[in-house]
Amino acid sequence: MSFSNIIKQKNILLVPFSWLYKAGVFFYHSLYNLNILKSYKPDVPTICVGNLSVGGTGKSPMVEYLLRLLANPFSEYSNGPQKLHAAVISRGYKRKTKGFLLANEHTVTSDIGDEPMQFHKKFPGVAVAVGEERAPAIEQLLKQKPGINVIILDDAYQHRAVTAGFNILLTDYNNIFTGDGYLPAGTLRDLKSNYKRADVIVVTKCDEHLGNVGRQQVIDNIRPLSHQQVFFTVIDYGSIYNIFNNECRDLEDVKEIVLVTGIANPGPLVDYLKRFNLQIRHFNFPDHYNFSEKDIGDILGTYQSGDIGNKIILTTEKDAVRLIEWEHLKGAPVFALPVQHKFLFGEGNTFDDCVRNYVLQINQEGSVLEK
Image 1 (cartoon, one colour):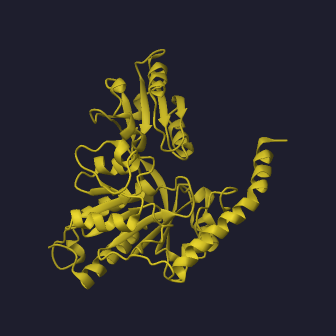
Image 2: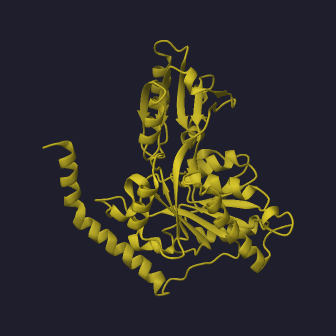
Image 3: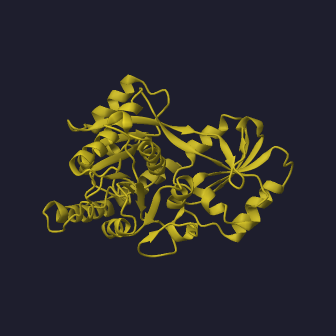
């Protein structure tokens, strides 16, 4: 029996557990749909970024995309310059703290988690907070930072305790939610029907050569509602930079890399790196992995073996915020590779306008923006 057949057989055996899981999720949402449980709606514009599945669909790059977008003045879209004070609220997965915590200059990765720390480092003017319960976290944030006038909820689509004003649903082009199964047989953690709550749907990690026919096939598969727009993005890799001194380098000048990843799906990254004809030694750790001293020793040992003239240690920005805290690595050429979303079919401006229009509409209703 082939490996793929074994996996299929294993998934079939898990289907009854998926039915139980789906029933539990359905019951949870029914409590909110029937108004038995109440949902909190913040007074400030609130944008939710999330998905229906577990695993990487590009939520962190989307949060960063929004932060860059909202950092620009809205003067050309309104009557005079407008200023936004943005905040991000995450759960803080695998952090060593509990409850609400607002990042400051003394915060370390174990306090808030890797992705929030990534936002905190890359966007120092943005308030980054973590909290297991999103509604109390929002209230605490607004008490401590009353000037905040737009909040991005990271990975909160399935959390009904907060009603966001604008919902962005992400789905992986290679595993679109319509064809997925529920946990544990599949990767769905939320009901497929909840796609209807989205304002926009972004199909991520697309084939860069996706044409109009393929685009329409995906849209027909998703069956968006009349008010929903479907966008398509590819992964756009930036220039690598040294995580200790920000020195930039061209991958074409590198012959060998020790790749260190602790992300849900490193496949697209590995495929991208293979284009450079690099020799790759890959340390592939689980998502949100906390590196041990032995791990760091193994990584350094692999780097130091053989010719190190054109060799570097390469990692993701999410992993970099954990690696940078290891003294053992200082002095080694540890580089991070940034990623961002690039919209296909020239629809980036249309997506931007959807976000801007939502924020400006709330501004007109509640005058939340500061002139």
